Image 1: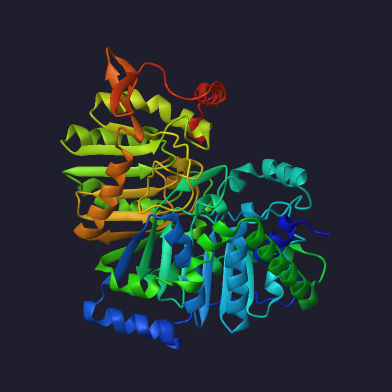
Image 2: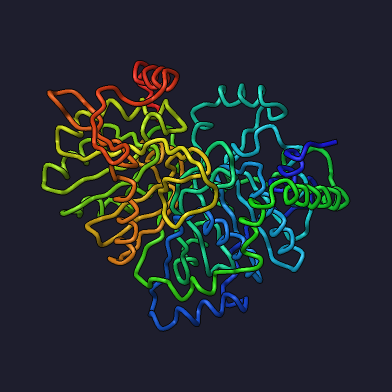
Length: 516
């Protein structure tokens, strides 16, 4: 009997094993084709091309928004993700997706092939539904049967296989979208006992959703995206789908009995929906949806600039003249980023960066890629803030991005930029060479002082001494200023256990930042 993990993955990531899956191109269904989409168009009409936005920094709201968009969708749901993990939150979303497909909603799911490791046979369930299609981006063609053989296959084609689709996009009826840093998994929705990520999503309503629909279509119709059925030899039927759905329902019932508080927390969208309220709170502003071209991952050397999201963002990066605030969970500036940031600071721009501390990051090796640049940045006046490990004691989701009472240890996963308190960029993009040159990304640039102020407030909250270490120079050496029990003090040694220190040291020794 399959484990619940296997069942979940088969249901969520399941691809159609039949050989008659749609293989030709398909397009986003216009918003006007659904009553929900038409209501959004009517709401947006007075704003003459502007789109509506609302930040989703709260993990509970981020989950609720996704679930409610499934329930409101009438014609289409387009989902694009880098990682999908098993868990209660994922199972609940899968259940809602299947119910949406039952009522005639077309569901397209595009996953980076990383999410399918070793699961090809299990990926045959969900897309057995006639209204569900699943494709994998940049799939491995060699040695897919086991984790070991897949790893070997990637080694034989490392130049292509380390380049991934890092996009995160949730799109309902081509009229409402969610972009940001969250993947799918309990750790992104404050539902995991060991680790939760603090993150920022952006609820995006109106014309911007149509722009993001174009981005999804580009990836979906790319030659790099292949139906999961291409990699599955057996022909699974709707009988298997029916069986898996019963097992999924049983697992949800069991989770409700075992952890009723968590279940009720996640399921609150059923009894207390908030989308209608949020639609009244939207900030309407000019915007631009930005994304990398899918073919970016095929470049043998550095990609052509016209393929890159960073090229589209360059005018705003170059034009900032007062204040630049960056939130980047994984920050490796590289020489190009170093020159840019120090140059802005030397020109009088107040440059502030929030990233993970060594003790908080979930990837210590990346911290080792960042650390060699720290001193040079500080010497040029760039202000650095490193989010502390935030041990939790109480459950639930609070009203802010950063909380002192988390249910579990917290690690920063957010990606955002704020330019001159005027514009904000929120999406999947980390300030590192991997996001800039190798992986594909998506995000939205919004021209709104009001939204920028909200994002800035969240950033400054995370930069506070109670939540972050601030590296500064003292007699030419880096020390870390922070606050405990209301008292400011200085640490001479970087916080982080020996294992994290070893990982960071090793990445510095081998020059891992050049590979990130």
